[in-house]
Image (tube, rainbow, N blue to C red; front, top):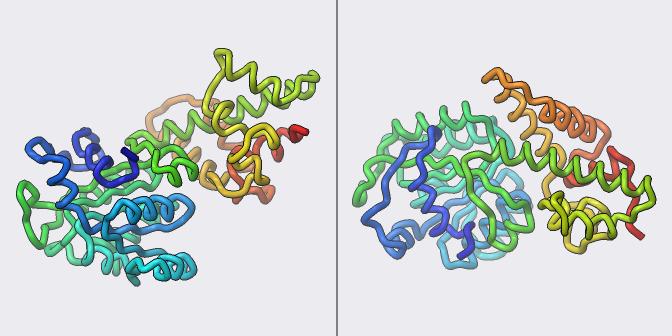
Length: 315
């Protein structure tokens, strides 16, 4: 079952996290959960959110959407999907709301702003609020506390208060399209490892090219050896080696370098807060910050191969 479908994501409520209120779901069948959350609100219709929302629509959920981008709102409206002017209006029409937003400030505004999801804290309709944004833990805690102080307009079964779920995703645009995203509560750590992995793979390819080894040959070696990883076998950064990845289309789409830089900033801040030395975090942060300053902020993060290391396309 595609994990981005709501039924699958509800299983995350069984996971204990310091960022959201834990509610045991024993006693509920899958069919009960599906029927209880038929009306879904989705806020944030960017590269990831639009595809996630589309999958929910395809799987038969009643979806209402909101985004500050008028063009994407029109696109959903033309598909017959109800569009709402504010997050509050989405909340009024939904049993569960999913948010997929660029930064902590956006999350705070959508949840606690004047027209936010929590505007009528004493009479909220949504029982479940799932934030799939990648933000700092402090903001997640702050929003979670605000949600825990709210009261449901209509109490159902075991639900007396709305529940906040911190559930960032991994897999990128391709997985969002295919409905194979992984929901987690450790996104900053995951993206730190991903950034370092991509830079290491890119560096290896450039060294190989300098030594006369083609990227295609080195890819085969890596993918049958101990260095095999997602950056080499599923998201290869060298143009001409793999079809269907951002490198095959001039690094368009995918996961923007500015978002990777943002996530590395979050990782670096978190490391400093706990007094941890993370030299690779800081090096990766420096590289992606430089890529953004050089005008590549909207390119997929695998563009480091070409625009930082000056790697060559595979002919």
